[in-house]
Length: 339
Image (cartoon, rainbow, N blue to C red):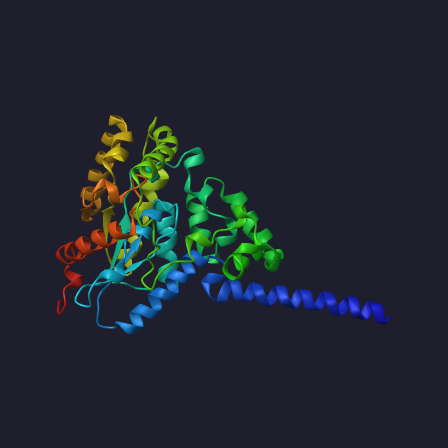
């Protein structure tokens, strides 16, 4: 009898722990499920509290944005520029971040959406849903899953299954924040968020030798040259970009596109057909949506782009300092004293 009571008490304790943790996952800090996003949300909340009079710009995009937009190098007379990047983001994940931000109470004056042709291709292995672990998805993300994922039924089933034993399902996310060295290398993700600074910027490389740049460009070519073959802008990418713009505007937020620096070697990897298609699409979207574009492709020297598209730390500083006055000139909302 005593053994049964002990067993029952153990079962109740396990259920209580899991239910409590599930509640924390759904209603607590987003860092529990997605530390890459959650840490940036925390940074946004802290900086906006400290700078209540500064107009806020949020940059949303991929690892290129994560390593490129370095708001901490700007002065107090500049807009407060916060980085909300998620590695691997194209328009679908950018829409996910916009919806999360609005749900979590962030309302900047301006949202910048990264525009990058490679991530406008969403077929097969290039679809963004391939790059997002289901353990990172929150209830607020279900709309994006249903509208844009290549296999939404399977993803939603995975989300439901993960809720049955949340402590076990999310243990890797927790260990990555507490003791990542305890995990095997293929389970470690702390590089995406561990070094995020006070403005959401993720430091990239300090520099690179010519040999390291050559190796970086070789690795880049192995992935992106096949991607640019038979290139086409996906309807999913187009719908998601338009939806992100619409939802920002519905919330009273000005929105624009920005095209981060690329090296000449990377641009040469794009086929003429891919260049024509992506540029025609960009012109069409800008004309139909009336969104401004900040085209920074040639703003930094190639040496600051070791793999062709990720900025070094000094390159990120130079890029962001050039970006600040362009933002103020592009968006009246950022000019002090403007109604």
